Length: 262
Image 1 (cartoon, helix red, strand yellow):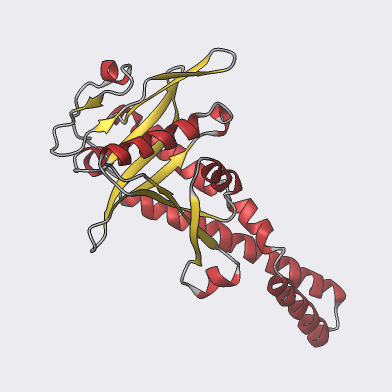
Image 2 (image 1 turned 180 degrees about the vertical axis):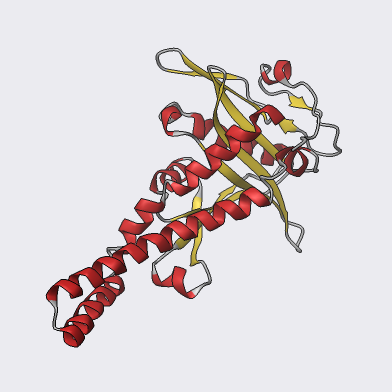
């Protein structure tokens, strides 16, 4: 696939607080410079480059699908799930008289439950990779009010985050924080918090009232980090399908209010 050409941003990324002109009108993407965290482990945050394309998509997919097991284990704590298991057990036992077949039937139920959670995350990943993540440069860097950053450490991509403008009918402007992901090997360095701050600064400089985001219940580390940074949970809802509601797949919405400019 031929990607869109882009300006060289390497030098600009090293100057903290300086915006970069990406040949689009309106708000520019501010870029944070180099950061350090313990043991001289350095990273920098810069604008996305086309050379990041494959790795960014891999990080996004891995960061989403890694929550499959947590989501599955959460479902196993729901009384209605165990009610299905017990119903399966006794129905098979009553119809076949076989304890072994009854146990096997429950094991099959458990396997189906895991596959449901796997499908939920994989479907989301496929949809995103075919949508905004199919041409990141065009979607995020050639549109007013959009932006996409990556964190780089020792020459490799160590994290990513995106910003999308949200305009409400009443005139309220918000920025949605999207695609936040940091690979396991780079966690604990403060990269996710730094990426989050970049989006907050981007929204503040754009005159927005708030930064909003959505995350799922199993992503405990993520929503706890957002809460520590000052985000407030605004609401929670279930993905509007019967199966996702049944397995307890809940979405949390968070909002970080920005002070109005005087």
